Length: 214
Length: 249
Image (tube, rainbow over all chains, first blue to last red; front, side):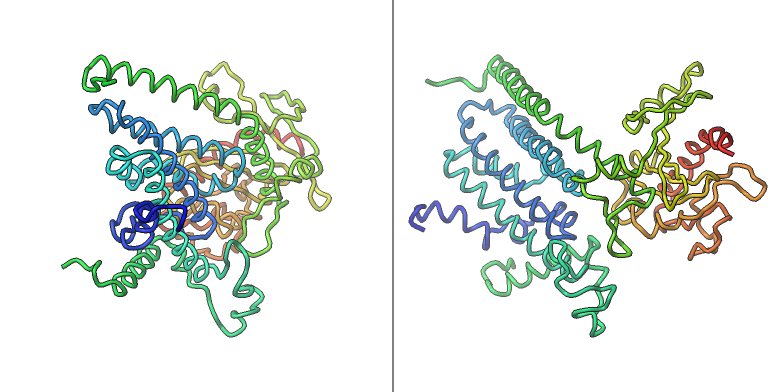
């Protein structure tokens, strides 16, 4: 990447794979289980977190020299909460049915430990540009897993992708269903999200042995 | 310039300034987006009312699809012919009746001198009049509400339920087709003609819901308290409309 120095591009690329917030650091699992029954909410959640974490990291980084250390956690919380309310209000105004679907989980971005974790671990000690890259990188790493899980859960659970019937019509028995294929109803339930994430972690660690802890 | 960020006075001033800045940003945003949020909420109520009376965009047997937001205003005008507000014996027509705040009415009705305003929406389906009644109650965690469409004999023609925060997979199933469809055709009066409501019952030995006059539908396993909430809001809120329906006969 010519645009970014090697050190900077590491900030974006590391969280996508070998330092992934979900599969390696095992953060933000709660929302990853809750909203991934379908692809669309997964994508919206990923985009929202990219916005909140990218913008939040910049804001915290800009304020890093003036934040009183005694109340820095509260300041971080206020910054996340503000950004989340902005996302929530914008969704309510422009994508109402989606905001109903995501309901409480948009609000729960506040408690997503990835966000506070990056503020505390990175943005408080680095400049705005690098913090921005770090935030976007980590949010992308989170989003990628969300989208992979959402993809498989919607495909195998409902036989659709973004609502399109890619496997044929399950009622009229067309496409794959004509051969006796059935949707796996278990895929749409939260436990399967955990299993799908488990499989992703397994695949990732079996390809990169360095990631395996003793 | 070095600021002593550890000083108490600095901490307090910082906190105050932060709250003021954040507060005004959010207040401005909320004010700016308010009209759109309000419009969305209005279309949602219209969509729910239409859904209860069977005007929807369902394609599959498990769909709960509303008519699209672009056309809901027109569809609502087309299918809902009259809107009433009932206050005791007084019935007035009001084209904004669907915007009446049921929650507020409910709390005001605690005052014994207050006559509660009851909204009612009249439409027409298959050439027969159909009436949609809003209901509201408590689930396990938070509010549940819905709309019940009945004919003039108070036989249920369709329902729509929604909730603020019932458990996913359990209580939240009240807004699924398999639960809502069970109410279709159920009677609100018992065999002797008294108002009975509909009980969401476990073990009523009628899983296919063939008996329409037993005043009961099958409960959702694992959602007892949400189900009881549905029973309660149907009994409590629909009972208030019985006097009006008596006048229709």
